[in-house]
Image (cartoon, rainbow, N blue to C red; front, side):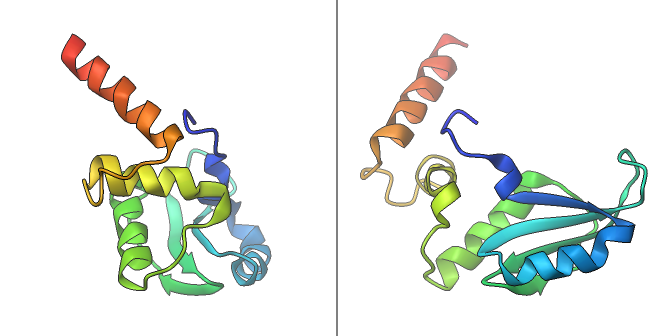
Length: 125
């Protein structure tokens, strides 16, 4: 959120009766997590998938642990040498450069500002 990007571009939630709609959405998706739930929004997920370039690369994941899922997504991006999706480029840059400390000396201004604020917060504690 701080980076000004829409998290709903990263995690897309559907109800069980919308599974076909979700599968059609796969084809148009560069990178995202798809969560299929029962009709009750608070119910456990029936299926969690990772889609990269319109292909479901991982499915039947058991948890929506965003940190773990983002690490898996980042691993796919990094291993396949893909370009970050336009709507989430700062989010993935922050994962890479702040959290994973890969090429952290070259940050965009937006990610540098977030990094500085995080450092200030940590020093304050």
